[in-house]
Image (cartoon, rainbow, N blue to C red; front, side, top):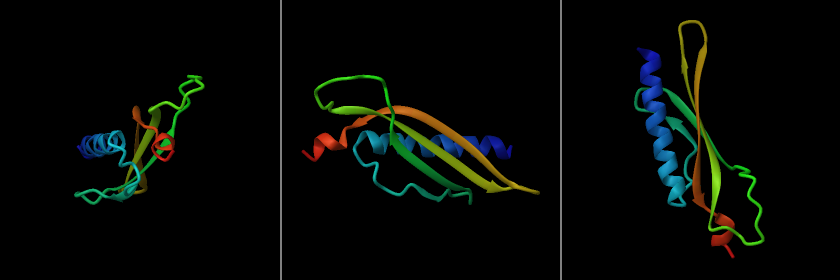
Amino acid sequence: EEREKVVRYGQMKLNELVVKAKQGEAGGALSGRLDDGHDWRASIEPYDSGENSDRTPAYIVAKIRLAVTWSGISRQNEYTLETLTWVPNVQLLHQ
């Protein structure tokens, strides 16, 4: 039951991070505490899609990784989720 709850909360937080990243708001908090007391931390980084172009693309592929941690009976537990998504190219926005 605990694992199912962690998976559910993790998926909800990952979805939230994906939406924010797609809206160009990826610079917000990348760690915190979920309502149930589980800690989370995330990273958002460019992902090499292998596409080569002379033009600066309006969107790039980003890898979003989320780790949810909690204390178990005898050890610290971690559940990690990862996804790829299209996000606005920040370099293009600052030209």
